[in-house]
Length: 361
Image (tube, rainbow, N blue to C red; front, side, top):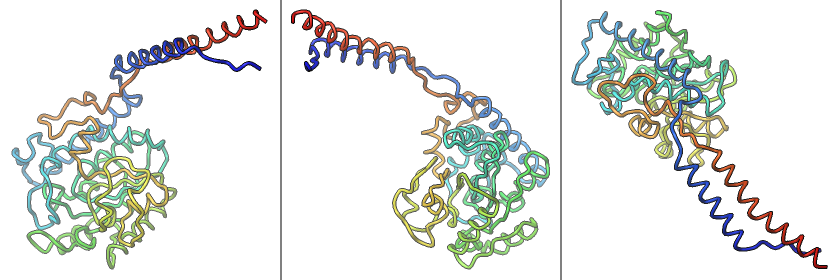
């Protein structure tokens, strides 16, 4: 049987055709609305509705909005230092996190992970980014995903660090107003060891304890961080099959307190950065080690930049206009035509040459 050979000239021509078709495919790319644009926009609108309710709550409490700290007047920016401020915080990150575009991003994350209506997601949140909490709950509301929620009361600078306006109290207000219906399965004090220790300017534990008790929610009272991790995981698992773990902020039981925690990346993670087996590794590693995907919100400015969300914009952009709502598309016809032509350039001369050889026998 004769061995088929390919003419190098035709091979070179085919390669050139493929290269040109690929260049055309990528050079003619364009931005189109995300496939879930409508849900993303609906989630952003829901987050705006929730923000407006918190702003009303703040006004009722007589807590003024500082225009220097919160130029968009969202009402979601706390004060630099209060009795329940547990750690330092970045004001630009806090302002960036108030953008409803993060609710749209959460819808995109659910799409990527195949999480759909009726699925359960565990949500562990410190009080440092109340805007992200509202965004996550808004995305859940629109998509029908069920959040199993454990918030902490303590917060970093400029987070939900004002007594009367903590993350737990915000969630309760939104539930009472009928905007959401997501009752936390438990709450914690937050702070060092998740027991309210370590306020920056004052002993925050008495105030945190009072807020927790007045909420009426089940309070996680751990012996240490590892015990808090165990209690939280048990509460999440009691709710059912968890499809993803969402961490908001840097609460020790969620984020962990080992050097490995510093290697955790923002956004979606499906594999741990490295192998860790420590009782204090946090729920992020606990779930990743079990093959459960994690969505992590901490470096908000970095996450915004890579996701197409403006950093610290004044004013906030119109809903549905940021790059997060759009996807890059390609004219696949160029690639398909180029591939077909390349195959012809290789195959036809080869077949014709073989036919000529047969005729000469």
